[in-house]
Structures are given as C-alpha cells and as structure tokens.
Picture (cartoon, rainbow, N blue to C red):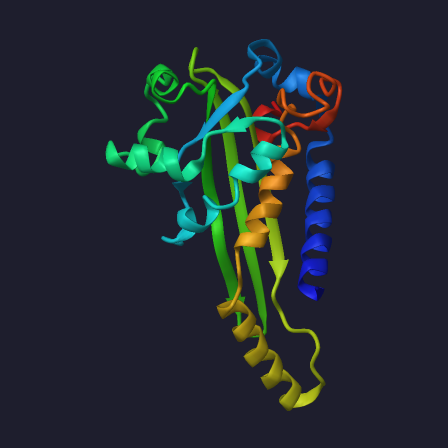
Length: 229
C-alpha cells in the first residue's frame, strides 16, 4: 500500500512537472481529428517494440494492454490469438510492420486499426540505499485503411522502492540497504505498466462501445511532446 501511495505521489509530481514544462492543452478533436473522421471500431494489438534493456518486458507488458483498450470502448482482437498468428508468419515484433502497408492486416484480421506499443523503459535504478522503478511506454494507433497515424500518447510511472521505515545509525542504514535491495529484486512491473497504460489511454477518444463515444471531442488533454511544436 505504501508503495502504491508513493507511486501515485511521484506520478502526480511528474504530471505537474510536465504541465509546467509544456503549459499547453488541446482538445482531443484538435489533437486526434482522424479518430473522429475515420471512427475505428476494432483494433489489433501488435507485439510490443522493446526499446528497454529488459528482455522479458514484452512478455509481461503484452498482458496489460488489451483490457484497458476494451474499457475505452473498442473491440480488441484477442491478443493471444493475433500474436500466435503473426508469430506463425515470422512476426514477433511490431517494428517489423511499422513502415509496411497495413491494409493486409485489415484483410487478415478485419481490424480498422493497429496499435503499436513501444516499451521505452522497464528498469530500476539502484544506488545502495535508494531504488526507483520506471515503466515508460508509447502507444500509437494507425489506420489499416490509409496507414495514417490517428492517435499517439505516452505514459510514464516512476516508483520509489526505497525502504524508509528504518531506525537511525549504522544498524538502521544496513537494514535500509538490505530491504531496498529486496524490494528491487522482487519488484513486480505489471501493476505499474497498467498505470502507464491508463495515463496514455486517458487521452484516447472513446470508442463506439463506450457511453462517452463522440461526446468527448472537447475534452482537453496535455499536448504530447511530439505534437507540441
């Protein structure tokens, strides 16, 4: 519980810092007009593009993305099924398809859009008595009809794994070192990947199976760095 509270506080500070840095908001319709023009209904999630140093990150991250997409109002092809089909064709990384025409995926899966995800960070920074876990992801939705990028956003969560519940003196310091190392070794990234997804998908226009579909065009979100020019 303390760790989740710490994660929430760090997340709030990060968001405030981002707000101060960009100081700009736009409506969903202004940022992602193609979502309202093309009105995608179904999505196929491609295997994650892993840019982190953790080889097992895609395996764990892929278990976190389908459910929140469904809750955002879209029909999402079962990831296990679509990833197995793609693997049979020799595709195990979304990067293999990123610059290729996507209309074949529409023919193959019948999906209106494909979701590319990039795992930017999936790691811990450890400095003897202090440790931080970071999960950072970028999501991008492309049309299978036109190949255009319809939506993109990112989410980052930083968690303090440091043990702060020790006494003073050398004994307290040694306990802090040991407990911090144990927290780092046993860290479960999945809940924080879910939080990172929640941050990113909060900026996605709601799909046709959500009660707020086509009612959120004036909702404001912070302008992504890539779009803040």
